[in-house]
Length: 265
Image (cartoon, rainbow, N blue to C red; front, top):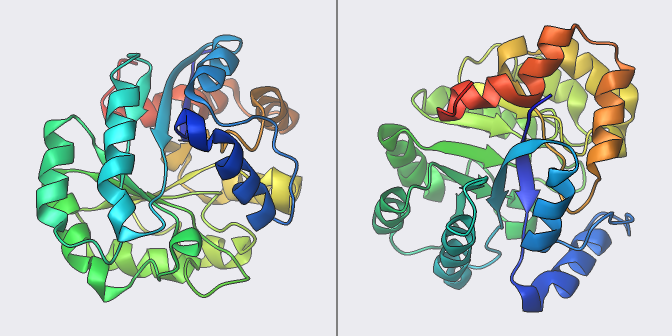
C-alpha cells in the first residue's frame, strides 16, 4: 500500500543532534525513534513504500525564517519524494516577499509550531500572511493543541479557518495534541480544516485517535509520523489495529493528501 507522510521534521547535519534533543526535552523527555536527518527519513520510508514525505522545520525566531526555508528548498530538490513546506514567524518583516519566493520555488504550504515559536496561532500579526496564503492557494499546517501553553488550542485554528475560508488548514495531531475533546467540538464542521494522525496515540492513547477517525470527514484525514519522534512500524500498526475499512485506510495513507496536494492517485 502506498504512503504519504505529511508530517516530518528534518534538520541540517550540524543541528540534527541538538534539535532532536530539544524536541525530546520539550515533550517531557519522550524517547525519539530517529535522529532527524534527511538520509534517515528516506531510508526509513523506503522500507514501507513511502512515496512522498512532506518536510519542514519551524523558525523559533524571525531571523531564522529565510535560512530554514533555504534548507528545506535545497533538501527537497535532492529527491522527488520530498515535498517542501516553508516556515514563517510573526515578527518576520515581509511576509509577501517570502511567500512569493517560496511559491516560485514550488513550496505549497507553511508550517507553524506556535508552542515552539511562542506566539498564538491566531495572533493578528499573522493575518496578512494567512490572507495571502489563501489567495496563493498555499496551505497552513500547524501543531494544534498543547494544554501547557496558550498558543495553539484548537479554537485558535477554528478562528483562522473561519476568518480565512480560502486558506486550507491542517490541524496536526488529530487537531488537538492533548486537547482532543476541544478539537472534536470545534474543528470537524469546518470544510477547510484537515487533520493528520501524527503524535496522537503516542501522547493520548488509542481512544483519542480512534474517536478522531470516527469524527472528522474521512476525506480530510492524512497520515503522519512526526518523524523523528515516531517510527513507521509503530504508526502503521496503530492504524491496522483499528480494523478500518480497507478503502478508508488507503485514503488516509495516500489518496486524501494526494488529492489535496495534486499528486498522482
